[in-house]
Amino acid sequence: MSTHTQPVPFAVTPRRTDSAAVIAVAGEVDLSTASVLASAIAAETDTHPTALIVDLTEVSFLASAAMTVLVHAHQKHSSKLDFSVVADGPTTSRPLKMMGLDQVFPLYPDLDTALAAVTR
Image 1: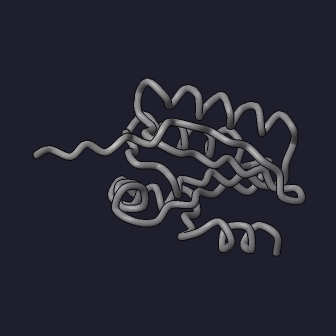
Image 2: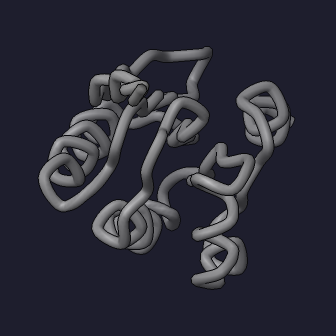
């Protein structure tokens, strides 16, 4: 007997917390969905937040295309705002750390910790 689990639908949900923009991502971020994340980041940075947090808590797969989007966003916007990523566990944190991206931008284990770091 085979059991099939439904994949989490891909979604990007932006929201504001004070002056920080938070982009919550769910599902698989791969070559076919990374451009949606890039567009959401561009749209949020156009609103001039003081911080941008990409929350990968609900991501079930993180491809290199997604990591490229995060690096480009950091390179483009980090001089104007605090850029950070919420990633914890083997699906998100592990690949980011293996690629050395935890040395490029801050990684936080949860959104509360990330928000506390940018609102000091």
